[in-house]
Amino acid sequence: MKHILKFLSLVMALAVMLSAPMASFARGGNLDAKEKLSIGEALDMYVNEDEDDDDEDEDNDDEMDLEKLLSKDDILKIVKGLADGRVVKMKLDEDDDTYIYEIEVKGQGAEYEIEIDAVTGQVLEMEVDEEDAEEEDKSLPEAITEDEATRIALEAVGGTLLEIEADDLDEEDGKYEVKIMLDGVEHEVEINAFTGEIMEIDQKEMDNEDEDADDEDGKDAPAWGHIKNDLQLQRRVLKEKMKSIREQMDEFEKSMEDALEMGDPESVESFQKMIGDFQTEMEMQKLMSKQMVRDMQEMMRNKYSADEWEMLEKNKEEIGDIPGIRVMPAESILMPEGNLKFDVPPVIKNSRMLVPIRAISEALDAEVSWDNDTRTATIVTDEHTIVIAVSNETILVNGEPVETDVPAEIIKGRIVVPLRFIIENMGLDIEWDQETETAEILGQ
Image (cartoon, rainbow, N blue to C red):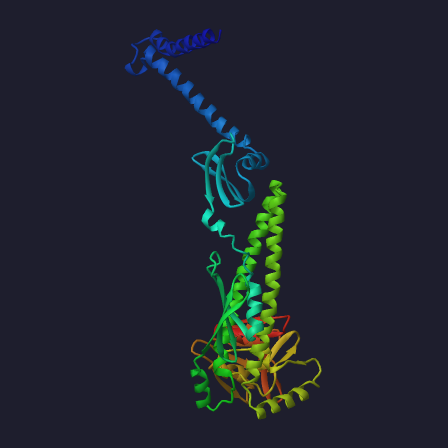
């Protein structure tokens, strides 16, 4: 019956197509060559129209495929039948109009990479990366963690951690190499990665050229030369490690959310443990950071002679009686480079740290001049000229007016200005640590 209906439709279509040219002939005149239409051509037109309809049907079928995608739960059931382990990655991807789930599974002694058709559930590809059986047969004990190795090294030597590196943890002679700085001497501690036993401690004297240069300039800076570079290196290493920990925590938190969405409690529990381990490590790094700040503050204090420190302490006591001002320790500003020393200490006013303009400018190799008639100070560097008028909230930076919420003022005969404003307008960066109330000048 279906074929009969299709044939009748074909006949009716041919009749309609041929009627137009015949009508033209009946109205008078010969049939133009362009108006002639053979049965074969008419049949082709019909077939082509039918093919176009088929194309549209195929497009609709493609759209329907998107609605037929298997759920993550369905895919997870297929995966569990293929690999024993926890899902660490599950991603839906498109390849040549085919939707594919890409899954990674970590199991006991093997890792799996699986590709599954998202519509049919067909397993398109599966790769298994098995651990070397020879390595498994060694039955190595579990290695101590980096944190444990660090604690062992610091208890043995003291000082401050520079870096730690694991070496051959999959071998019997696996070890940790821990570098520590103590009194200007770098100590390298080798620790057995499985027993925690200290194997060797080497010492390396640091280059004291900076210290010699300071002595030539007549600056009283005990321990300055060999501590400065060490602390800068430590801060850089610590900040990079803390940044890496934060990034890994963010990644695991996202993976845990995916595992929750897929209904995989085993993976969720695993990710929670890893996140907890990272949080513990982050707390340890924060403690190390606080200790490093204390070391840097000690370094800043060592730059003063006994007489300079006595004068500074005397001025601190007198300024402390001024209403609305909180006196800060001179070492609350960390500046490894330059010879930053104050005779009038930094203060906090209206939640802003103010510092003597001459001390901070000269430490940054800028020239400072004072015009007593206009009560203005001018700071000049290679790239910037800053003009500051006492009690004026408008400061000129390279001739352009810039507003500040705390104007410069005079304390104990010294012009004090907002620290952040000056540093940033000299093209440098400053980092404030609220917990330790220290400001570190960067980019010197």
